[in-house]
Image (tube, rainbow, N blue to C red):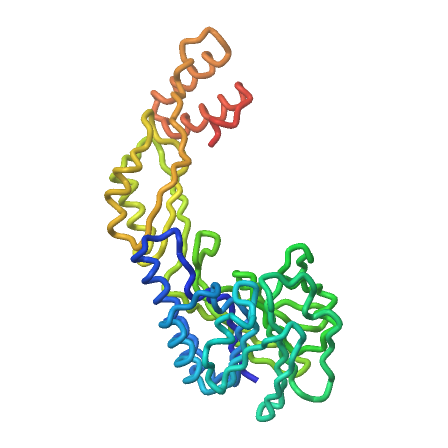
Length: 364
């Protein structure tokens, strides 16, 4: 059976770190994820879509989002299963209870595991919901799917190896191993886990399909999973995101200037992404001019921020005239530098001073 496994869309997230205009744009881009999800389901010829919680970021849902959900998920035509998570628990007042879902969409509404049969696929899909923002007991505890010849799938939001105090459906690997499932589709962790196993039972986190901050770096997407009873699923990660969060660590030297640093940022960062540039290394004898660099870069990127982790350069030769072992060492090296071994001598001076002064600073 071919399934799409996705989770953690966090539709209508506030995007507090962006300008109000960018936040509106990013929420619109989140809704477009649904179109890409539908296109992926068609291209993969999927027979079901499993959405493992936090589809919504909270109780506030814009009308545009409701329209996107009902229209796009309805057009997928295949069964869609949603297991609400800690951000979007199923309650009597939650959006899940108010949205007019298409007939092909099943929203699990209880924290007791429910089963939905897919006779045409010879499969059954199990699932359960958070019914409050916290779920301290494992929803999987004591569950074991009957071995009746059908393919056994489950969609859940939770934390494998979590603790009850965390309140995020703490699932023990022993519970997964005893579940009798052919595939467990999980949400909550925003990084793709790769295909994992607990005992003989395969499970995975698909990660989120679109990053919302610098703790969610790189490509984000969904999983195309081909699963058969008792076999090893074939899992393919497919990026869906419109933009990526990236951290670019850029080393500088005393020879660099603001123009040169700005040019390197332009060469290494993608204009459509949300980029944090961290400047490292040494920056000559004056503080770095972040404003000048930002002025040359900001307008060319969707979002760009700079962090200065540089240190001011120390003069390698400032103790040259000392009547000491350090002074003698530096005078010998300077003579070599004058003979044309400049770069090698600079390195030798840095490591030598570090050893003589019992410091790390010189050996950066």
